[in-house]
Length: 73
Figure (cartoon, helix red, strand yellow):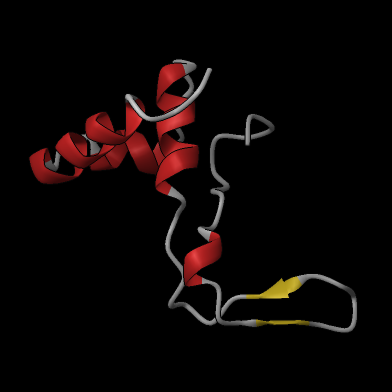
């Protein structure tokens, strides 16, 4: 998650794609980013570019901050 600022971490509860021949996951477009991973990145002071853009959305930001308290360091 800390390797680059552009890739996200998909929520295992929203995965509905399939694994391709190369062993990589083929996204369907229905997946969502993992809120726990985003909360952890926020606590580390390393939000991704997508997170920094979403910070403008107050409802999203409030959901993130509620999740932050549940994340173990």
